[in-house]
Amino acid sequence: MSWDQRQRAMLAEMGYRLPAASAVAAEVVEAEPEPIVVAAPPPVIVRVAAPSAPSSFANLDMPALREAVSSCRACGLCEQRRNAVFGNGALQQAQWLVVADPPDEGDDASGEALGGDAGRLLDRMLSAAGQRRTGDEATAFVTPIVKCRPPRGRAPQPAELDACEAVLARQAELLRPRVVLAMGLQAARRLTGLTEPLGKLRGRVHRWRDLPVIVTYHPAYLLRSPADKAGAWDDLCLALRTVND
Ligand code: SF4
Image (cartoon, rainbow, N blue to C red; front, top):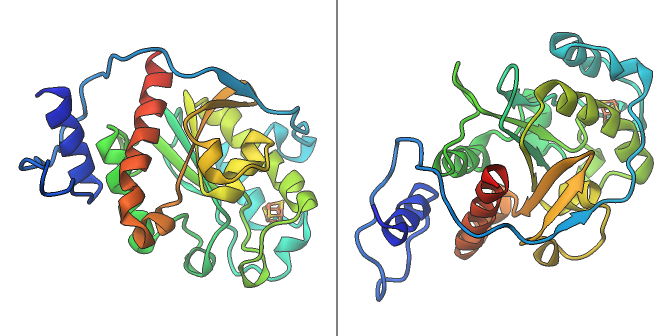
């Protein structure tokens, strides 16, 4: 399959159809994509130093960490949560660590990260990039930037982000991902340490705790703005190039 056909197929996997004038029949790909060989990724942007993981999480294995998060009271977000959202996906090493914006109401009710239509779109996006977060062969782990839903969906405050970064840092230590995908503005700003609009954070390789970070749109946003799925695919390609570099 040529690159052009391949790109069309991947976009079809994500539910995006190219304009009719230039489109050819897009084939839905179910097999893992072939390695993409392209030019070196853009220059790396280094994030400001992150706070160290507190000792309360630092030595826990994954089951113990999940248990600790379920009853965590390290910040005020514990007060109104129904369920902490630890995340799901690869049980041991993950190739991709997907860090999304804070849990929405559905996630808070279920305790699962990114369910519903947004979760289904995320799974198609991961599949298009040869990744999956379910099953024994899972290669990706999906988790929110803070594990407890802020009241009324407000943005998490710096102290809350600081407290919960300790959990994320331990997840990253245990999963040892090759790339981090920051989905949504709040996740992107936290992991890059920058306050620019999301559009300006895309297209670059940032760094968080020695891991490359690629910024992209949140799947819930893409459901409202499907024209941006093409841009999201560009971001996934940058993540693939970064891993293969
Ligand atoms: S948001 Fe994170 S740090 Fe705060 S209570 Fe929940 S799990 Fe603990």
